[in-house]
Image (cartoon, rainbow, N blue to C red; front, side, top):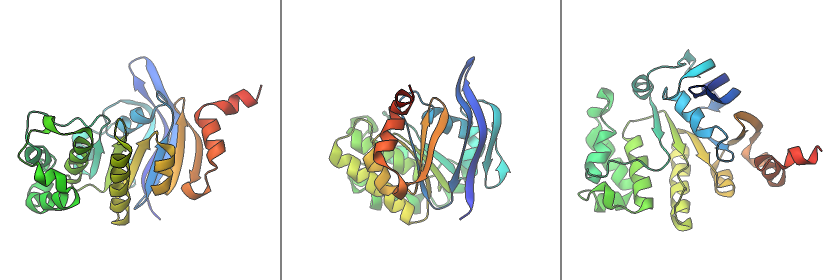
Length: 242
């Protein structure tokens, strides 16, 4: 399977604070890759660096074989990379329909906007029911679906999803994970940043565990040992060494 995205020895952070330390990983086309790890480990910083929202100090971001290190965010979107940020981040004072249409803002997406809007409504019937309501009136689960739908309006080849289960009821988490699994089955390449280990492993193809800005585990999802994963996740492996 072809590598759609490759991260090579990436260092990135915020001003004088470095967060990622020579981090390397690769994302296979048509697969769902899950990036697990504790808070502050660098997961969101990695997604932002891919999107050009955080400056990369060294290393490379290769997308479709091309060096896209520190490429402007709008160029990454034009190339087919969409990011669904943590915390939903919808336009609260705009209608659900207008929020979705914002996702079709890139020129290449405008002609297909009506067809893609119908596709999103078919996938998320509740968004259709609430299409004329302000996004600020949605529940947390509905807002997450709106953020996902807006990302799909960009016609992405690669979608980066940051902590979609955060703060949601278990039944809604199951629904969101089911939709991500369906998108994977339809051929979309997905990078999922998540802290809900058990839910993520059920739909992932490959798993990376990022801690302290480094990859500490890289395995296929079906070969992950949960006990070892949790030891690494909570840094219990370092306790065992002393």
